[in-house]
Structures are given as C-alpha cells and as structure tokens.
Image (cartoon, rainbow, N blue to C red; front, side, top):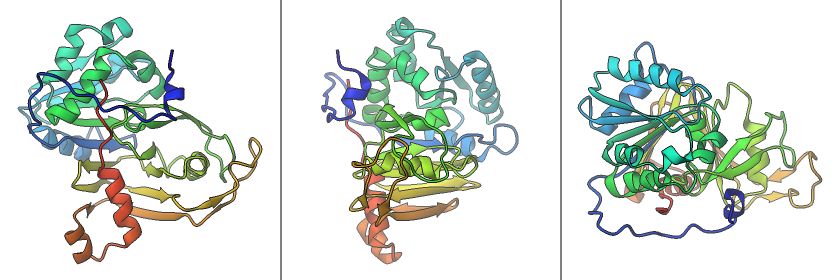
Length: 309
C-alpha cells in the first residue's frame, strides 16, 4: 500500500469529478503563520470571513490537528461569532470513520470557507489522508471555489510537500526536517510557520537543500499569505513572509552525511512585508518593476496543485 511519504516522489494524478458543475468562483488560500489575533481586531480572521463571502457565508472549522479539538473549536466559534458569522459549524473528526462519514463530507461541500486549526499536522493527515473528507476538501476548493484557511499546523498542511517536524537549527544541516505529504493545495512550495519568532530559517533551508525545485515559504506569527489562484499573492497581518528560491542553486546536500552542515550557493531570498500585494499578471509585474526572480516565485505560488479524489 502506498504511504504518504512514498507519494512525495510521485506526481499526483488529475482527477475529474463527474456531475460537478463548473467552478463558481476562484478558490483562495489564507495561510497563517500561527498566533493570529482572535481576541481584538482580528484582522486576519476578518479578511478570511470577507473572502468567504462575509458574515452570511457558511464557515466550517476543522480542528483534527489539535490535541484538544473541542477547545480549539470553542475559540474559533467565539472569534467568528464576534465577527458576525451566522453559520459557523465544527468539522469534528475523531477517527477515520468520521472522516468517511456523509455528515462530515456534507458539511465540507456546503462550506464557503473552511478554517483549519493548529496542532500537529501529522495528526490531521493521519486522520483524513485518502478519506472521503480529503476528497471533499479538494472538490470544495477546486470546483466550488471554497476559501481555505489554516493556521500553524493548518498552514503546514496546505502544501503537498509538508514539513512535518524538525528542530530549528541555527544553520542548515542535512536531514534536520522530516517531510510528509499534505493536502497539496500549494504544489510547488514548502510552508513553515512561526517563522521569525522561532528562528526557523535554518530548518527551512535544510529541507529545501534536498528539494531545490521547490520554493521555501516561511510565515511569521499573526501574519498570513493570501493566495488567489492564478492571480496574485498578498501579505496581511503584522509580520512578513520569507520566500526562498533554491532553483539553480549549488549544494552539497546529496553528498553530505546526516547532520552535516550544508553549503548552499546561489539562493534567492525575497522578504515580503505585510501590506503588500504581488500580481502574477505580466503587465502589472512590468509596470511595478517586479524583479524577474520574484515574478517567477509569484507564478509558482499562484499555480494550484491538481485536484485529488
């Protein structure tokens, strides 16, 4: 039987879903670096609600990554309620049987927005991998244009190549990070969270050294990367998003021993502060003087992963 890790080296197949109408709207991703404001002005959660369609939208909260899912649900139920959301419900998944249940799948497919809480990204993927809920999440995002949000662990699972764990090393070292497979909404980037606050640049570089075809994306706390499929990216909140492009770099990663310090030459790094938007439209890119390397990185980020089902 194929495991998630073996599939990391395989290309995901495109899957058509019979009987599903054309996309109503373009799906967006709101990828949060963790510790977002849930008490005061709630700018990131407020923006998520706006992208879902406003207070009348149907928002579902997936807490399966959390060791205390009911507490996580209570927190977001209060936060979204204070933002005026009238239809907010819990996607409670205690086991894989629940992830295959019609009730949970129905709640996913009716949603205008799904928000994934923090916790342990491996716990979430163990519960939903290749279940009916997993397929429904792809249908909701790709075919219904559902807005997908996630914080901390919920951010890490957005990418196909998911950074599952690993210590925050001061400098990049071989085999520091453990990779797994995530939801795959972002196909060509590895996402890390709590980035500046926990000093995770070394960790992100470590996993990127062995996957130079990918982008590394580090998102600070109380900061979100908003991805509009095929259109643009935007950074909101109070921190920044760090994008590392290792394509074309030279590295000793393949020859290095475990925990050996890594040499990485020719890296490109982009620091995208909150309050800035970066278009994937070539005309806008030229008009704003966007550097060619950043143009390529933005194009990679707005490219959706294939639907899985």
